[in-house]
Image (cartoon, rainbow, N blue to C red; front, side, top):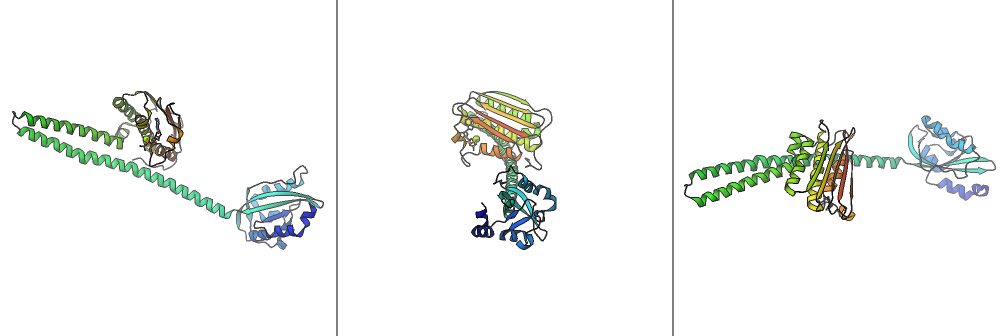
Length: 362
Ligand SMILES: Nc1ncnc2c1ncn2[C@@H]1O[C@H](COP(=O)(O)OP(=O)(O)OP(=O)(O)O)[C@@H](O)[C@H]1O
Ligand SMILES: [Mg+2]
């Protein structure tokens, strides 16, 4: 060991290493300070050697940094005691602090026990981390904004359908009434046509209402989440005749709007998926509220899905992905359990109090 340490090439290597390397003795005195350490701490080796390690450490961290030295005094410690990647802060001679990571190695020689500290200046990595975090925050905000715009857009289309097409259909009904009034009572053929037209207008009205309420959960606005979910289930049962058991226990207090809209949209998409994919004969839905969260489970006894089918990416499959995004924005979680021929189960948990300023589902 001694032969290696005193060998000049090794010292040269240490001197030319790109990262700062500092060696201290058992009294925490610096005995070796390589060129990279000079550049990082802005001390010359001459100034540093003989100084206390504390010189290189901000005052508030000094106690923590004395620990490696105490290891030096511990005779039981291995000769390669490495504290890999310990996050620390260094102090330059101009008073500036910088983030570093340290690993250490202990060396026993005849002249004493030494601790070498290998440092890595992580200023740049921290900067990149921060930039990444900022860009992730930006993406979350963008996601929020997109959801907001999507909900507003749906609301706008629903309004247009109601106001514009709805008015036109009403006008058409009135025109038909005028026409009918002018028809001779004997003109059975024309009267039959008018009746057929009335029936078509009535059906168009019904479709219009259904499309508009799918786009914008009017029930949700008017009657609240529990009634709106009950309405979705009742509609589902009456149209598709699938035996459905629903248990909704969320108390009197209405959830905040983003939570209510998210839960409503999950139920809507899950029921649509059951119709589209499940071939189920039984469905159960449970929506409960605990002290801290809403719990939603929707389960069917249909054909289920193999994992690769779930992995289909947008734009092929948007439904489950959109659910996940909505739930994540509210700091909730969603889990799917299914297998081929084994039914499909979806569990979502959403905090009663979601994070500040989530998207506003208006
Ligand atoms: N209840 C279910 N039973 C069986 N398979 C399901 C069920 N729900 C979803 N799946 C499977 O998961 C896949 C992804 O569902 P997702 O809702 O994301 O997309 P999609 O319904 O195919 O299309 P989109 O929702 O975009 O109109 C479906 O294609 C289907 O294979
Ligand atoms: Mg779907």
